[in-house]
Image 1 (tube, rainbow, N blue to C red):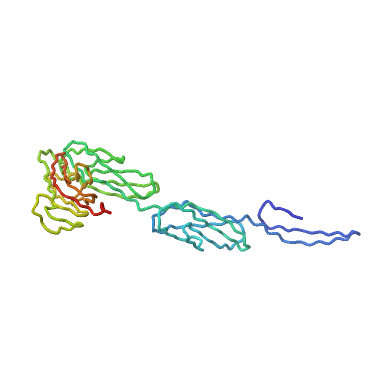
Image 2: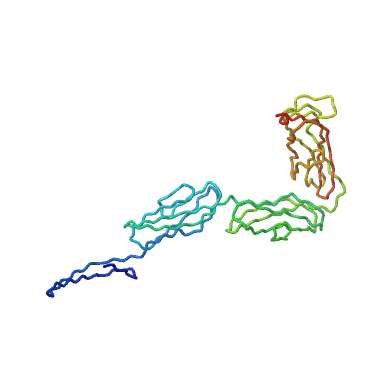
Length: 310
């Protein structure tokens, strides 16, 4: 016969045989019923790229002892029950645990593994403005596991919990604003920026294009000075400018023929010009101070970029 037991345990099965004239004989056998073998990969798991993640395996039922095999979903495996493993690339993986008992029964379970890049906060800046003037702050973050929460402290005792707050200062001075970002699994990172606050300003900034000079340049190298009122540039060139102001430079913008090409918020102020073609162009650098005053400098150049010819 076949018989199914509803509960695990030890049972005694008795066989009684009776012949045709009524003789009987009996025998017994022990029956051991175990729980069905199960595997538990636990999870979900989270970890930073190239840092070890601790895995935890469990099993129940079947007949111990067990053997363990983890497949981490990136081509790597382990036969430890509770292994550590580092993933080399961010992404979402499925880690699979296979458990085998002493009788050869197997059970499997999977767990999702989220591997993220390092959480990095960016407070932008530097910033500047006048006393009691609202200053727009810009916070951003990369890596970790979104969504993020935001915590700003402005260096004057005030704080805010939105990503891009507006804050005003009641006294002049130099303040440190700090942004702390927390992701959805508790990772934290902070970044700080300086804030310059002034009582007032009427002085415009100073800016001068310091490169190119009136010379011949080939592939970003100055070859010889020219007796002309403009530079001749063959290939790419790094444009450089000096800028200063009594209350600080907020940003420097670089233009080619009145088209914005690049912005620097902190020195050094430069832009790699890699325009293709042959012709005369106007390079312009524009400086803004924290009070909104503007100054500019410009140069006429000839550009001959060989890439245009191929």
